[in-house]
Image (cartoon, rainbow, N blue to C red):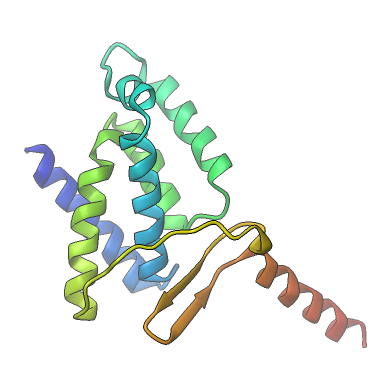
Length: 156
């Protein structure tokens, strides 16, 4: 199987799991896969280490776990995919997976997907995604506010 075919299978599986289980927002996962892909393409030392067959898979899995820990809140299917790719020594497929996932998302929504990322320290962590006039808020700040409201409501 070629790397393009493998990337296509991983991207389709990720899309299908996210869509079927509604484990996360499809667009939020797109952003996550793009960010992780950019991490590998934008960091030659990391890309070389992860693509080097002389580096043991156990070390690659440990690096993938460390990256996931630093990444903050990721959709469960996305985190599982990264670990699976590391265990199978296929992390270098992430850029192709990101491209194919984006293409599937464009077909599903009928819209062209453009990623515009910016850092907002006010949300602490996570992400806020806007799709047209719809806003998907997965920020830590919003989650903390919801917990506060739940605790206030439970205390009364």
